[in-house]
Length: 197
Image 1 (tube, rainbow, N blue to C red):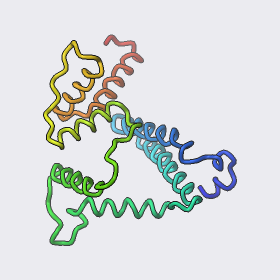
Image 2 (tube, rainbow, N blue to C red):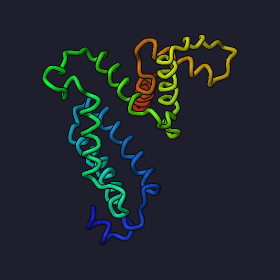
Image 3 (tube, helix red, strand yellow):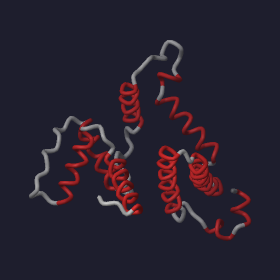
Image 4 (cartoon, helix red, strand yellow):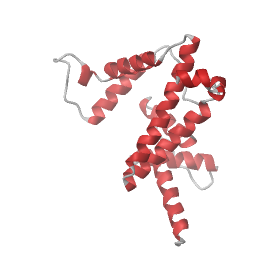
């Protein structure tokens, strides 16, 4: 990437901000490749898309390195330290290593994450897709002990009804983003085959 930044005029012009759209695009292409791999076994395509996503991480790290902010080693050290802190059941001292259920691991992860975020803004990223944003807001409501949302009725506006559906999906243990994605894919496949819905 350093050579590309030195010798390619387009890559020289790029900034963190100008690359955001490519980072998002590559993340979504990776999601598509995961779906394809799990349904059709095309793991070569998944490997390719993961490479494209990794390229975005490297690109941003090199830009930061040029500015003297951080480098790829800092990124790797940071995530390694975070994984060690948030997984004491794996990386703790011998006596601290415990057998935990997946649910207990998630609860501990969230507690540790909350402690790490003390003094930092708790705002959710504004660029999150609406279903994911709604899901995360509802998770925060649950964790803070607020009562569940009342069921939305036919007289409520569409946004309120959609939020109610996200809450219903959460209560059923269903990822609303994935559920909608699966339904749209199924519809798309039927349309391609000319089948009735």
